[in-house]
Image (cartoon, rainbow, N blue to C red):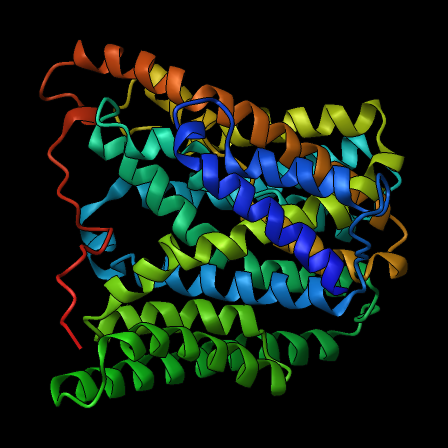
Length: 423
C-alpha cells in the first residue's frame, strides 16, 4: 500500500471513531461502514485504494487477524466447564456444526451444479462459522435469557476453530493436490492436523506456564503481560506453518491450552475487545475492496438464492435437529437458528481462498456466493438484532421459571475477567 492509500484508510477509521458512540444507538454497524468503504474506495469503484487479493498487505492483515481471533476466542472459553455445564453449545457444535457443513455442501451442489464436490464443500465450510459480534445486541441484551445468550456466544467462539482443518482439506481437494492418492491425504492430514495440534499444545501450555511463573515472580509488567499471550499465538502459527502444519489450527489449540493453564486470559480479552477491533475493521474494509467488489461480476440469481438459503435453511434446520430433545420452545430454536451471522471468520477464510481463486475452476463463483451471503448477513442480522432481541425478550418474560430457557446457567463456559495486576 502507498502512503496515500494508508492515509485514506486511516481517515476512514478515524472518522468512524468520532461517531461510533452515536452509531451504537442506530441500526448502522461498523461492519456495514467498513465493507461499504471498501466497496466505494476499492479499485473496482473509485480506485482511491488500489488493493488486490495477491497484495502482501491483504494476506498479512487477514492472517494476523484470524490468528488473534482464533487464539483469543479459544482462550476465553473454559472448555472443561463447557463440557460439564452447558449442553446447548455442545449441541450446536457437535451436531449443528457438521450438519450445517453437510447442508451447505448439498445446497451448493443443487444451486451450482458446475461446482465440484470439493468446491461446494469449500463454500459450505467458509459460510459455516458464526460471528456473534454481528448480533452484539443479542449476546449482550439482558432481555434474552442468559442460557440462550451463552449458547450463541460460545458457539461463535469455537466453530471458527473447528472449521480450520476442514477448510484446509477442502481447499487441497479443490486444488487437486491429492488426485486420489491416499498416501498424499494421509501425509497431508498428518502434517496439517498433527503439527497443528502438537505445536499448538506446546506453545499454549509451555507459554502459559512461563507467563504465569514470570507474573508470579514479578518479572513481567502489565504492558508485556498483554503482549506475551498474543506473541504466543503468532509463535504457534508461524512454527506450525514452517513445518507445513496448519498454523491457524495451532493458534486455536494454543488458545485453549493457554487458557487452561494461565490466569491471564483477561489480557487476551482486553486486546480482542479494544486493539483487536482495528484489525477487524481493516478485515471488513479489505473484504469490501478486494473480495466483494470483484465478486459482483459473478452475481446472479443463483448466487442470491444460495446466500438466502445459507442464512436460513442451511442454518435453521441443523439447529432444529441439534436442539431436538432439549425442551426449548420453537420460538427459542427459531431465534437461535436465525442468529447465526456470517462475519469475520468467513471474510478471512474468503480472503485466504481468494489467493488461490485463479487455480480453482469455480473460484469466482465461490467468492461471489460468500460475498453475497456475508453482505446480506451484515445487513439482515445487524438490522434485526435489537428489535428481535426485544421481542423475544418479551416472550421470554412469559415463560415459567422452570422452562429450559430460564434454567440457572452460571457464566461458566465464558471465562470471567479478573482484576489485572498492576505492573
